[in-house]
Image 1 (tube, rainbow, N blue to C red):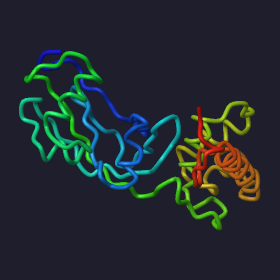
Image 2 (cartoon, one colour):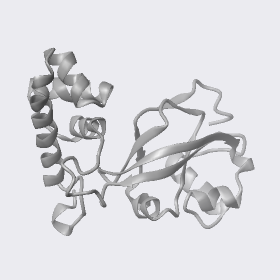
Image 3 (cartoon, rainbow, N blue to C red):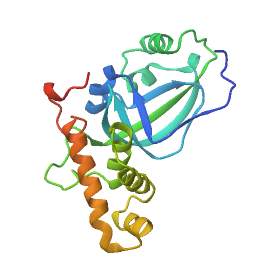
Image 4 (cartoon, rainbow, N blue to C red):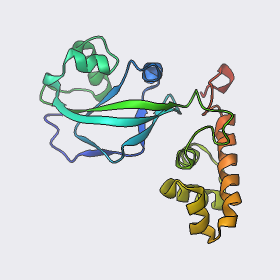
Length: 204
């Protein structure tokens, strides 16, 4: 792909990685993801998805750009590989033919909350309203119009209070927002997308 002189790509709220990397990310042995081309991040926090499920919330700690020829063994170790050679092989498997002048983006992150270790005693499992809303909108089918409207607004406000005021003009309507959030959280947990993962909750 040459030197990748095309337009930069943008990373939004969701960071997708292969299922085989989930355990390394959760254990802290993989703290970067390397993408071909120039990638820019829009937000400092992202939700990491792996193997068809959300696995963690993470803080983006740095974004660097390098040529493939300049990658090091240290870059490889942070990305969960034993050596630079192993890393380059994985990049070629993922992207096809790449040459030494190809540009890559190294996105470094720190997991701030594992979704398999949530606070079950907390009404919202310790998650922000916006996190629940984004996951529900991404994974749950059959949401009705009002639920979708409430969840979409929560992704913007991250506040039950603000969403009640914005959508209903009345703080006393917070119960509607809470009801939508709790229903969404229950559905996500019921599908095995949040909370401890068991064999019965594994997604195919």
